Image 1 (cartoon, rainbow, N blue to C red):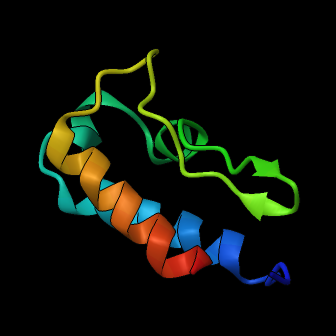
Image 2: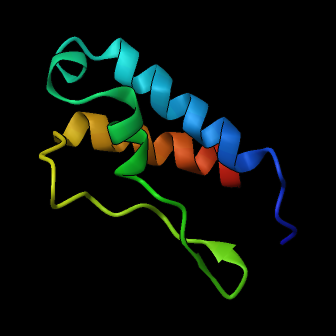
Image 3: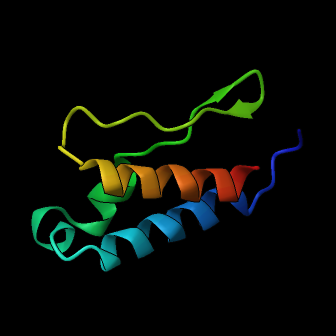
Length: 75
């Protein structure tokens, strides 16, 4: 699979949209910190799904939105 140079910025943009849409996240964490919770890691040239962050408690619904955004951007 070829790495698309627009995938990472698109994923970050989707994370920002998720942050703006959630009524509680904007009061708990900044957009930059939220995006930094989900770094893109590669294994054998393929992006790995983001893991649930242990540092900050992201609820299940928000994490599922992050996984959907990841699959839309990288598949």
